[in-house]
Image (cartoon, rainbow, N blue to C red):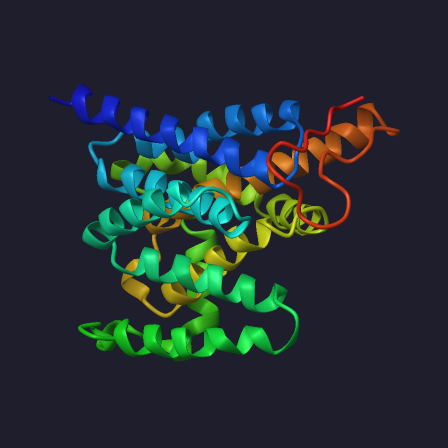
Length: 273
């Protein structure tokens, strides 16, 4: 029946939203800000469009990605090792659904740690990276990759579909595509602003960049369905841009929602004035 997979999609996205809320709190943002970002994510145009389809795999991958990011960040902050079990479970499930997602998540964690560790200890990560590079390419259909068209492929992946090019069968993507184009540059501004206030956000950003690099070289995987994996990143950065613009217009003296200095702990709440 149609309603069963749609209901399952709603459950998966709701769980994913809960973990996105935890990630935002972990990055040092206030409770009010985090709740607003959660509501914006759950009502995001891409989430509503793709959740209404009979496609359980993509919402599940999205949710497991958010679970992995939350567990990984807490583990790297020295929290309980029980987060390692949750991370391992999410990775195991992801390996059966979309092999490259856990590999790219590990890559994002590795790059983030490498950039943050002072001194020579960071070079201990090089053997791990070499091992991943050796294991990951096994069985990859390299004939699908077209690196010469990288720039065009990146633009196509980030900006497709254009509302005026949609046919009848993809009419459900008309409004999402309009909103995506309208909020594309605000999303870039929001990402830049979040980076100024949270180092933990770099993990999400690096993961998004790695996925964009992959899809930019594979023309067969440059549709809005593949970009849906990054809807949590677009939704958060778009919400942050809206928050910033609204704060500047309505409350010019309002302090920024993020923590000052380095990345904040999860329980460091910054209340809005």
